[in-house]
Image (cartoon, rainbow, N blue to C red):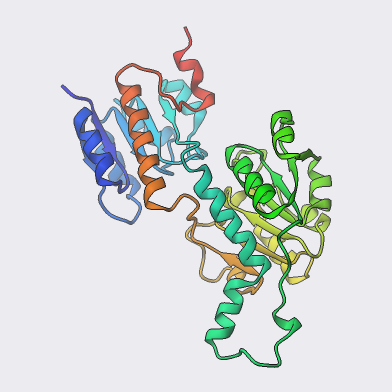
Length: 327
């Protein structure tokens, strides 16, 4: 008999067709998030779970006695309680690389939009404020040939660096847990300490994963180090930034502006002060949100689940659970 799995979010029809070849399955077919108690009921007889962002913790595992593998349709997997999964020998996978270029495109669009004040001036024109007297009041700042500092030089960080270097002639700085000599050579990039990068960069892109160590990685101290002309971009996870400190930095004009695809609370609270500040461009966490990329992510996640439940090591097993396949 084919393994039984649960699909906890809407997926492309092509992915569902592939899954149907390998599994019996049940699915959540609505746009809103699946209620947790309902998910518990559905997982009672399932060996696999295909999801994105569902908390995989001790509570869920207690309601899932047959569960063997969880496949995340995302790069990040901070929703995994890795210790609980290790104890139960639950395989956990993610979908890196396939979305690198798509997210990098979005980051460049945020950089350009903030620097040239695109959304703000779009509203300005639509409201009928455009005047022949306009001059410096509608000026922005240049992107080309400025210094781009990237915190987290993973696959997406490198894709951003390539666009900045070859598309806009930018000087590339980066900070990472470990220096990357090959990246430095390929992109003429220079390694900097966190503090040096913050002080020297005109555009600062945060691309670190969310871990206990990176929670509020950028806060009051860090914003105070940035240039008054700096643009800050966050497309990693909302909790990597202290939003109260960011709001204060923008209001005090410690930095020029910010572009955000992620927030500490998602969906963002409509009363969040960030939504009222002109020099902030905000997006609803759409880093990988194109039809082609979401299809590729879904297919990779499905293949990961097939491998895990048919006894093969998945290609994108998260590094903290690699020991499950060590002899």
